[in-house]
Image (tube, rainbow, N blue to C red):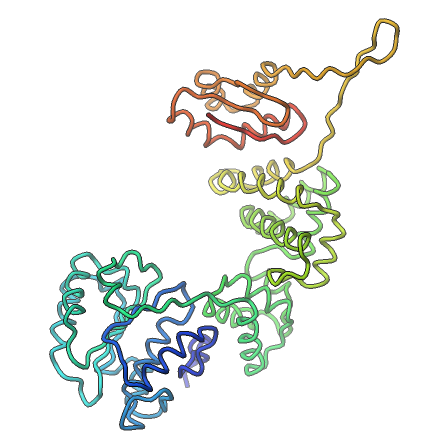
Amino acid sequence: MNYQPFHHKYRPQTLNDLIGQNAIATTLTNAITLSKIAPAYLFTGSRGTGKTSTGRILAKSLNCVKDNKPTVTPCGECNSCKSIANGSSLDVIELDAASNNSAEGIRDIVSSTQFAPIGRRYKIWIIDEAHALSSAATQVLLKTLEEPPINVIFILCTTDPSKLGDTIISRCQRFNFKRFNNDVIVNQLEAIAQSEDINISYEALLLIAKHSQGGMRDATCLLEQVSLLSDNVTPVEVHQLLGTISEDNLFELLNAIALSKTEPIIRIIKQLYADGKDPLVILQQLLEFYTNALITLENPKSPLNTLTSTTTQRIKELALNSNTVLNHQQHLRSCETQIKFSRLPRVMLEVAILGLLVQPTEVKIPLSSNGTKSSPKTTVNSELIWTQVINLQTPTIKALLNQQTKLIDYDGETATISTPNEIFRQKVEANRFPIKMGFQKVTGKMIDIAIN
């Protein structure tokens, strides 16, 4: 017997098997029970949320020959159910609009709807990726939906309903498939792991669930992959497969940041890079950590807090506060684009993280004429600082700042830069990160940049 991937093997077969979409399952169950079947359905939602699977379930329920009428519990054994499952049914036809999006193809479908089903109750078309239909194809389909033939049902599945247009959407019963929360995914993965005799820890399952971003298919495929990596799956194996950094590595880096230690930060980043970790992924994990840390600091018992008790305790040991977390998060977010498109992403990551360090500013207090220390001067020489910042830039940025900008205000916390028009404002905005790093190097602290 051919091997079945997990996402095929554990695909729901009836509406009762449909998890995490209770409202949709109940509505379709009642529609079948009360014989109130619409001529067109629109299933929308992110990938891996059950749209196409639900379309097949609905088709089986309507055409199952176990009973003399549609049923909410298709047998899965009759010729109709089997042919739908293996894609050989002449009355239930699946079409991938991404590769069959021409008007001629849809016109062929429309012309075939005039023929009665071959021995079944309904002729059903399941059009996947319906948003990929061309404008001409959409117009052909619209004419059919305006006056739907008897015993013909269209099920449109899409991740981007806005591209279908209101005229199509308004003629369909729309069902929005939501992303699965982590608890639902973990429970499903636990059931699969038990059935497949996979030894995997809860922490590893939770890590898979988080990475899948609400998609059950992604989570199931990842479980299948990681089960082939080790007989005893832990978060280490999951991180290895995903190319992400482990929690231990993450906290090692965070501790170095908290202690403002430059050498350990450079060493850790270089080692992670040597191990094949993507600098952008490292940055995104830090951003995710700061989000979780903020939730933990504000309300550890919040349902949004998906961290284990051990991780929560490690966050507390970092002695972070909400303002620090928000500032770090804002700074890293501003660096994300620079790292993504840089030719030297590792170096840019190092610069970004070093920008988080707390560097004390030395204040020189001059002696008065009688030899005592006078009060420190608060005047900031903004012109000198701006000149030093410009000199730290690359030749291209230096030319831009010298010729098209002016520092109109600097109060030690925010630098306001003036530009002659919107075009140059956008150019300066695109170089916000190196300018900000220049101020950090000159003044010894992170400041905000305002560009007018």
